[in-house]
Amino acid sequence: MEIEIHERLGALAHPKRLDLFQLLMRRYPDAVPAGEIAEALALKPNTTSTYLNALKAAGLIAQARQGTSLQYTVNLPAVRALFDGLLGTCCQNRPDLCLQPAQTPISTHDRVLNVLFICTGNSARSIMAEAILNAEGNGRFRAYSAGTAPSDQPNEMVLELLRQKGYDLSQLRSKSVDEFAADDAPQMDFVFTVCDHAANEACPTWPGQPLSAHWGLADPVAAQGSDAQKQLALQQAYGLLRNRITAFVSLPFETLDRISLQHKVDDIGRMAE
Image (cartoon, rainbow, N blue to C red):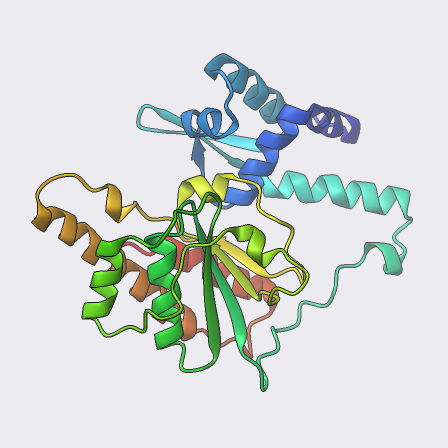
């Protein structure tokens, strides 16, 4: 049975259901476990289940089982159909209202591309990513990092690892994402979250509509065990970030339209160690 527009809009009309839907949009194309959704939104499990079922009944999200976990993702074709229906009906397909901007490549001619890496504390993963891209970007990129709940300073083990590998540490500091939402902040071309917690949170609306993707990886500082095991976790996180950044800087930015480029940076976020 076809789901009507008003039914889908009704499912989004409840503020908490809308929060849940927006979280899944931020994590798209990843699937998110129900438990993680409940924790991120501070909801009881039965309340989360009720909201998920309402969005699923409206066709806006999809459910899949992975082992013992139910995971959820946005049903993007249905979301597109919703907005196509709204625009096609309400604005009578006026091109000045309905048509999307031309999907042209990002301009890289004679300018540096700004990239922001976000995690919760801005003390480990995002700090490493900032240092790596600034060193490996061959002058074509300027990397920054920030946290949604920043630590007082970068983790000393992370700084020592970067120091041993010869990276410049002079500009590395822990800072809030709010710093990059200020009027005088540099305009970003790309925004990447490198931890699940930060990806689940609502970040500022960035000017210029930068491309965004989730490049999540486990927190190396949270690793348990001996000193050798902790060092191994740091080395593995560094290696994965360096591999992803190497793939990123090698992309043919001049020839990819924004949709193709979005798919490429999403794919990079799925690279394993």
